[in-house]
Length: 327
Image (cartoon, rainbow, N blue to C red; front, side, top):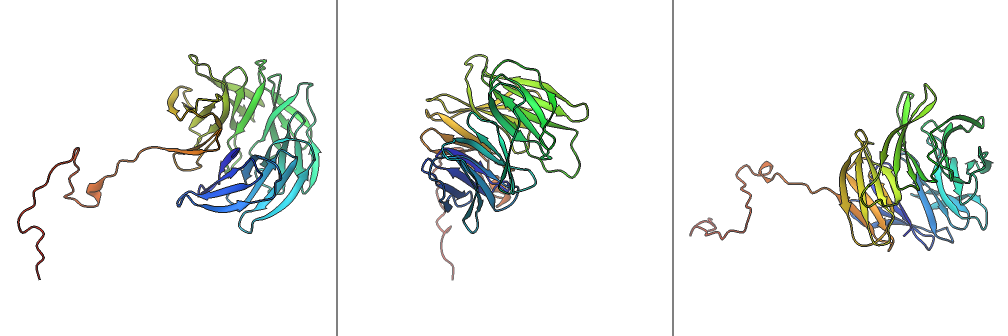
């Protein structure tokens, strides 16, 4: 397996495979409920449209499919033979519009089968991009370390963050659907200098402000994937090492390390946080999905008021008439 993604309602988990298949698990039963086939090469990215049955997927041979998961019908929305697609992401409010990110090329906006190339603002090679919540703006990063906010409808540069002269690997915007327009929005960026930076984009002043720089100053690992928690209170970073499967969890507010989760001696290639429950899914380089969740202490006295919990095994001596059957 190559990538994973929770459904926005949290009831299922999808995974793309190296042979082009997409598997969907039911989280309650842990059974595979769908096996989707269309891609002829390895799947590189999966994205769910908000709270619906629709999914989009990209692969290594230049194809993007829009899926109706219930009927298992696939619609080819983009194809460019020989081009490796790094990702495909839904527009926040329109399932017929998506962002397609080719390797070593400028990103494309695909709407109803018609593609529009995002104009390269500077000469540096494009790295990653993500829609903002309104879908009219795009956060754009390149190999020179520039982080930009673009108005994609008018092909206009709105603002630019401070340049740290380190290539950008990944940009994550937490999609939040609210009734009122947000004055600012949080963005996390994975840099090649072994750090994860959190920014706040202020739409009123039109600025991108650095809030936290997150890193491990002792081991200084590279980060393979980063993500927000479901409630956006925490930031996750998965290490980029062939024999280490560690997940760092930082507080979004203080920027301090909250917890480090140590996994098996298998490299981590993807991770995703459940949208509502405290569950993390991580994918190893061997194609194994690990689910992380906290242990829950049961309050058995809530079921029976006279229940007594024992710390160790004890030998119980029954009374002579304790289990006699009375007719």
